Length: 162
Ligand code: PNS
Image 1 (cartoon, protein in one colour):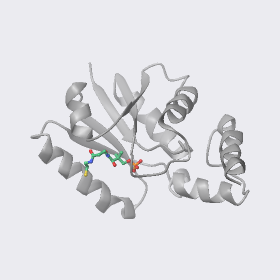
Image 2 (cartoon, helix red, strand yellow; image 1 turned 135 degrees about the horizontal axis):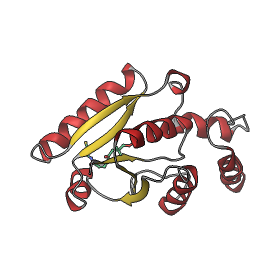
Image 3 (tube, protein in one colour; image 1 turned 180 degrees about the horizontal axis):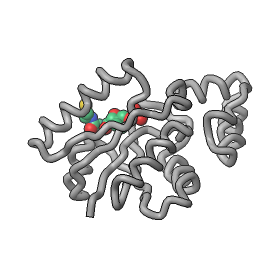
Image 4 (spheres, rainbow, N blue to C red; image 1 turned 180 degrees about the vertical axis):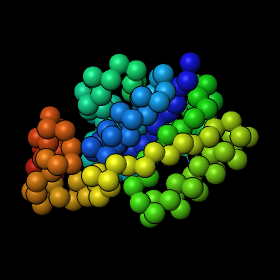
């Protein structure tokens, strides 16, 4: 059975991420989307909230599982017997960062964790979680960026911040 992990912050998940999730779920038998619990960042949504949101957003994809992890991806992959990480590439600007992570993971895992890149569909190549947060923080329209059910949750976060 071919299993892969798609790690990320997903704060919040966007149509760009969901495009990668859908396409990867058609390539692998099981795709585990795993939310990084990053203590250095101050996220908009907690890990638990992001897991719940991802579950809702992928409920029609039966071979997609949602999980979370802390620390190094290679350790999480080893513990869960995962050998392929999936990442999306939007533009050349993503490439250097992604190449560095992929090569570090390959090295640190002793060659046991490889990374496969899916180029994001052109229609979503402009999208990022950061731009969604910035647009929402100014009350802008994010309906082309995230699933409908998520829009009020994002605005609620910014309203609570004041
Ligand atoms: O959605 P993001 O924030 O671009 O995802 C980045 C992520 C989660 C893939 C990356 O930061 C990661 O795997 N972090 C876990 C820590 C780790 O393993 N670092 C080693 C790679 S340099």
